[in-house]
Length: 133
Image 1: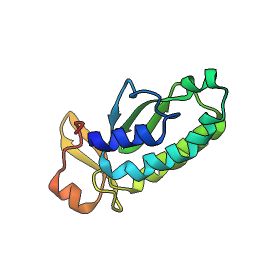
Image 2 (image 1 turned 120 degrees about the vertical axis):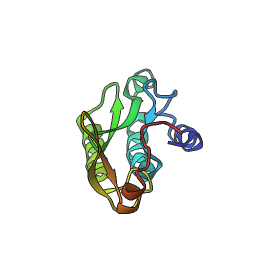
Image 3 (image 1 turned 90 degrees about the vertical axis):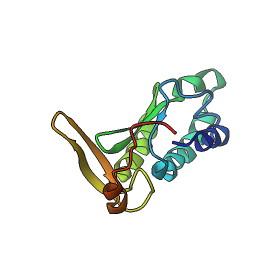
Image 4 (image 1 turned 60 degrees about the vertical axis):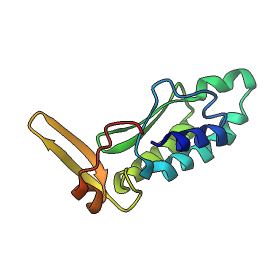
């Protein structure tokens, strides 16, 4: 994810990101709206907690795994987990690279195969999502 997008997320959602997630942002820019959706729902929940408890509910990592978005917190409530699951499930149909309609595909060969969710155009370009911007 582009640095400026990460910085804007951290600015807009200070309860979700009281600091830079220590395991990082490792998801494509196409999932920005999904990540924002999670944060928009989590921010008021976390902000309403007692101040001394908020930090433990922070986001510690955002990444792609097996073609879908993963959004990790240190701990979360059932309501928070349901919100995260909702958006993670949506990611299986949204291109991680550009945000268009997508589907899971396998990339690579032999022992090195990745599952990614990409639209047809990004899959044909064989975009490299294995690095942070």
